[in-house]
Image 1 (cartoon, rainbow, N blue to C red):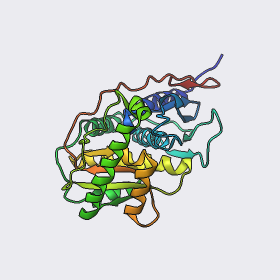
Image 2: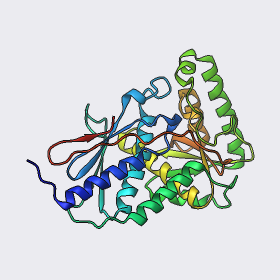
Image 3: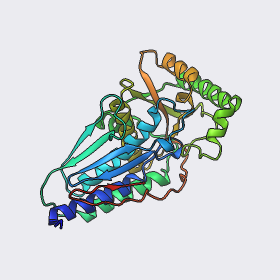
Length: 297
């Protein structure tokens, strides 16, 4: 018979709350390609290949980015509950059936901070409902949130936004001409608060990846989640444009637009019109401790 100590039971509840909140993270094309498994002292993040878009994302980079978004919310939720948290991220290509990231917590009794967790839930709710402003007065606020989370974000100048509009239009034209892409994206929601065309008077930024490693794309997703939360706190909103980075032709054009050899991961519309994202229930989370594993299907 396995006996659970108070600290075991506390961690089990904390992991369950963290995984539930992470299920509400923003993901590319609302794919939510993650799966969580809990152990006695860790919460492991796996990619769900069945939710990847193989035509739009053959290398799985955007899938990994989306998982990084959930990772940030899970880590933030554990910290809000009073836990010291360490993150282990896969470096290169993870082995089959291996996690892309692991959240480790200290082996100590922690008094649950329900108020802090509820405040975080309110922030996530505001993030999902969108903000109130169309354009932030100071994009440095969102850039700072990105950098604090370990990411890099390049805010585009007015002339670069005009070039981005052409790139985005080409990306959508390529989708229209590619039957496989049309089938793959049929019925999928547009990225939240995202207009059909780039607003030439809007403010845009490009999230950058350091390289093509799993760790790098996880960190991009973590930074994206931090930007969304910061925008919600400031009553702003953020919308993603994934089409320009889903095609090698338009992705190469984005590289030329940036002009410094950076790897564009995702385009963000800063202060886009507020909108309600598609409702998606948090992925169900079950757990068992001390020798058994809990998993999200």
